[in-house]
Amino acid sequence: MGLSDKPQKYKAIRDCVRELVRGAMIDYNVHWNQQPKRKIVSIFDVARQRHPYLKRFAHDWATEDIAKAHIRRVRYWRNRQKKEAEADGDDEDGSSGSGGSAPGSDNEGSNGASRGAKDGTDDVPEDDEDDNDHP
Image (cartoon, rainbow, N blue to C red):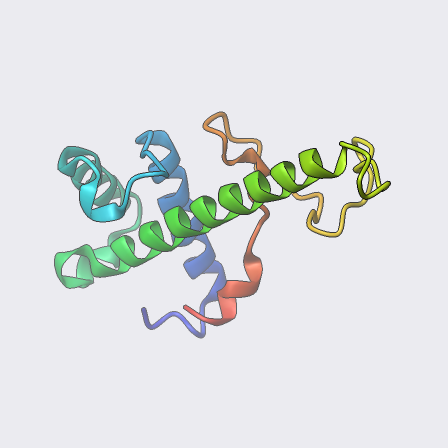
């Protein structure tokens, strides 16, 4: 995107696109190509309005890339949490003796970060480490 020297600007754009994806009530279980086109177009339009820098990218490829990465990340995290919950449920039958973990404890798979979104993405950890990959 040409923002390697402006990480704050990239982060602002990335956060905006994520907010727009959540606000559009995108179904995280549905692949990007299967999402309603009106929702995708709306995300692109508002992102361009809020960040005129995005107008320079043909066919909104930069916005699309950020949105798709966010959706994949949420889907991955939810599937991981589901598998861990199922594994914890299997452990509670007394076969492993671990008994699971107490609420609020430091689980190995949890970093304690919370997004606070109302669409179920509040359990997805913040992923600022990818800032170095895509500025």
